[in-house]
Length: 105
Image 1 (spheres, rainbow, N blue to C red):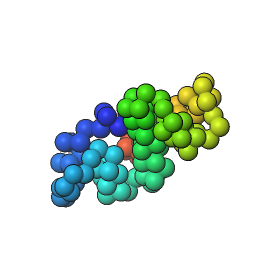
Image 2 (image 1 turned 90 degrees about the vertical axis):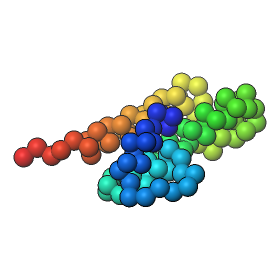
Image 3 (image 1 turned 30 degrees about the vertical axis):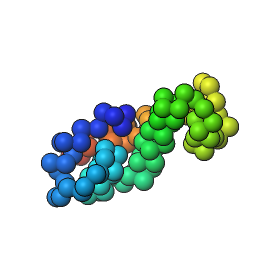
């Protein structure tokens, strides 16, 4: 999800450029600027997901991966862990959609 952030489009909507600012941080700054109410929750989810992805692929599921799993998911593993991540993703996407839709009179 974080790899799909359109950083160029977000940057166009920000008043300035910050050196070395990456996708999630750029998205966070834009969401704060626009008054999105769930910034902290959703940015934390994206950072946790990115950490899990990074640990799983870069370190071939070594001890860093297990530590990240425990930090982010507690004791959840297997289908329960996947369900928890998907629930969080769905909550974020639904809230973003509801926030982005114009209110109907």
